[in-house]
Image: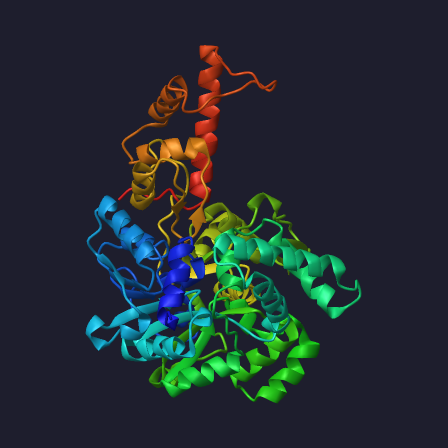
Length: 528
């Protein structure tokens, strides 16, 4: 009979988990969160990074590409996925990263010390013994000032989802092939969704998750999320208690906006703050109950760091960070008075008042996806308004605090080297050029550690964006690809363009649009 380890390994060998970057796990993000809450994080440009459950390295390899001075180690139980990752490393010629086929339980101190340890999408889906091994590795292999991130399914949100999962497992239990199990499991979900009483709690739960089974998510995700041998959610308070047994302390959630009770309104915030007596974990546990939270990315540090953590934000720490905000600068109205303006920033509705605040948002929108430092922002505001006030710096810091609390801004300890505009000889990330040179149909990863889906023009252009080709040469390159029938331009009526002048104009327009999109997606950088 196969053991637990063999069952899990076979499941991931049979249905490999698609491996791609997760923004929340980026060491640059973990460092910024630590700095926000008063810790001094390790540098990220030469960091030692360990990923537990790395699959084929899709989350780890982009870091190694961007930071040649770092050291990266990935471990996974699936030999199929490790082999695929190693083939990619060989093709890319990377020598600062290693992927290892082994059980997480077999990791010991000999593997070394790491500044950042990442464990995404693993903890809830392994046995209790392996869960304890994950926390042990975070305790034994994490540097003194290091940061670990572990993601997991949480209660109370998963209470009702467990009913759905168990029903799906019940119907698929007599089928061996993963695709057959999933087909019967889908059928069970659809049956329950159609037949449950419309006003029942069960129907409400099924309705909330109908999109999950409608084709929105890939089969590999549904297979591993709902049909794995293990799926053990827990409460935040339970998870942190287990971590404390390993002398690890709670630092934060990667989605820091979820930590601020003020986002729930004063009628909820005031009684909760009185109840929790400055215990951040207790406060967030109460908020999880109110939000019916289903998933968390928890940052852990050594217990010795806990006394340094400060959850009340202050001006000095906020002033040290670099900010990016996806705001339409043209939508910000600058008036002579203090007229309030409602804006949507990163999905958050905010009311902005005051010329300094509005100009700050304009400038951030113009620089996006690049970052701006508070002193740089203040200087630019004064230049644009042609006036200065002693309170400008504090006004900008207060705005950044609001944006951080509401989750309307991204931030980093170091600036992001995004090109401020499309240059005559555009330069793309070397890692993105390498990805497309290796596989012309690939997607890639940007400076914010996000997966970027590319259109055909962007894929054709990226390998050429080495800072040595002019935009005119890029247009000629696209025209050559059109002549080779690798792409085509069409009239509005659907017929292919053949007139040379029309082709030139179409190619020029598509190249300009592609370059703007690549810059907006943080793939174009400043030349050194």
